[in-house]
Amino acid sequence: MTLDEESERATNMLLGKAVKRIARFREKEILIEFEDGARLFVDSTAPLEISIQEAARKS
Image 1: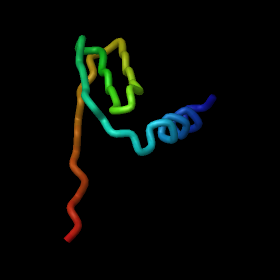
Image 2 (image 1 turned 180 degrees about the vertical axis):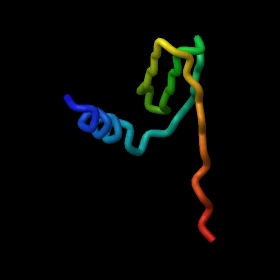
Image 3 (image 1 turned 90 degrees about the horizontal axis):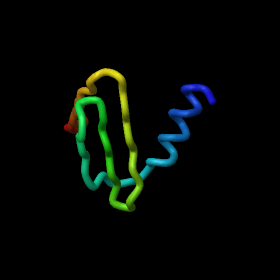
Image 4 (image 1 turned 120 degrees about the vertical axis):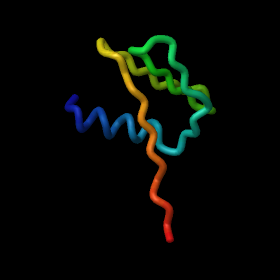
């Protein structure tokens, strides 16, 4: 599976899901848990940084 295919698959699987919580157990891990019980786990060999940007407000 290519990176584009993997990205599209993940997007489709997460479409419409609401985030329940985000957990950090180690600096190299991020767990995103959704209201329906689904989980997205990110693991890295390097420390991960979370960056959240709000959408631009419409005038």
